[in-house]
Image (cartoon, rainbow over all chains, first blue to last red; front, top):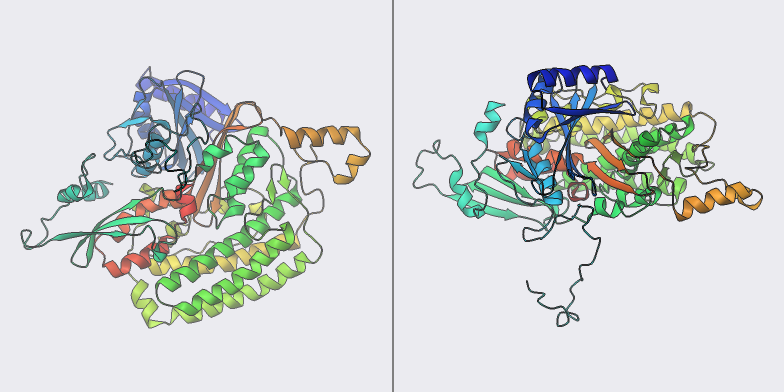
Length: 169
Length: 421
């Protein structure tokens, strides 16, 4: 992990390139994270790749309900030479959940962005095949959101077919 | 990088798959008008997929031109379920993601929670975690070797591998009471100290296992059929693998010695002397040999950990996070209160977010946990290597014969419980 000073220096480099890109930094338990604006994600990742962070380990979604902006997308970057990790985080409001896709530069983000789209409903603009990946194609809702209830779907058996209205839909 | 991009078919969302086929480049075919593409559906219920994986392959005669994995058949919403459970009750559900690497799932989750809590794990617990993780790694590789050899038509390998796997499951049963999904790792340490006689049984096993590895290699290394099926089949260079996020034995087979146990040692891995088997060209043969040789290194780590097993507590003495010993409940009011609070509500974790990566048998297994100050995690996400590695299947098998498709899928070693979670 870059230390707290290194993180601030990186944030300043990004701010020099684009004043509105970095919204803040988090340094928690020796793990460094940059909070960036949604539109600045590809540029930030490209800048960090130039600094050696050439491996995108993970993309995951987070729901910060009830805070706003609610939906978060985290990119975990890894520098395999310095063995150093940094996390890039962005937040988008529920009303406008758009983040630019990074699949063009990072092919590994393909499935992972689809998973975030599936589970949280974050739309990755520019993803070449943004469809649901784990849930069925015709599923409604995004189940990992915090306000999505657990359970509640009746299990369909032949004996309760007649009592489950419109089960065929 | 540019080469990867140009080879991706131009997929159009919202089009049915059959019509997407038209996007596949056919200019290299001598007679594009008369040649025909055939898409076949493979799985989800096919024994060679090692689970419920569906693959739609586009064939040109016998050659695979494109393949698209369709996943989610085993999706059980474990990440969602974990959000509704106290931290220590989430461990059993998290363990069931990658069902061949349950100690690793628990390790990643506990590690992330310990990072947020800033909780120190006693040395003895770290060593016990290493011993169990490495036994689990051998077990996972044995299941992989047995089933993959079965896909290649070598049924005796299956029996040999499952015979040895059985011994590991017996060891797990002795130390934790369960053969699979043991719930042995806890936040702050492990559930129980190892029973009397367990160490001796493990030593007997680690003595026998390298001999068995020699037998496996003797069966496979000089087998003409295995050599012809695997050598120079589906090679993929390390750069493409890294672009697709592939880690673990697949990456090491391509010559990149990346292993988190060496690169970023966690849980005292830096105390042990072991080697990282590395391949050269990254074909199916390398992928197989790298994993088989890893079994030997696991045995070395286990032996060293047993030799140097420190005395001391096996779980953190901090009573806010670990249950008090049973005998104290009868005499200490304090212990009774702690026990009651832990069992009913569980411990609270201060707000924070942590990502904890470890080296699972299939690559980097990372667990992201977000805590919101309550006794239940606000978000648990597993970066499962099977899920990420599956993306490299398309570049691996493109322009291969359909017969090598199965062998390559076996060498990829996806565990569908981990892919779908």
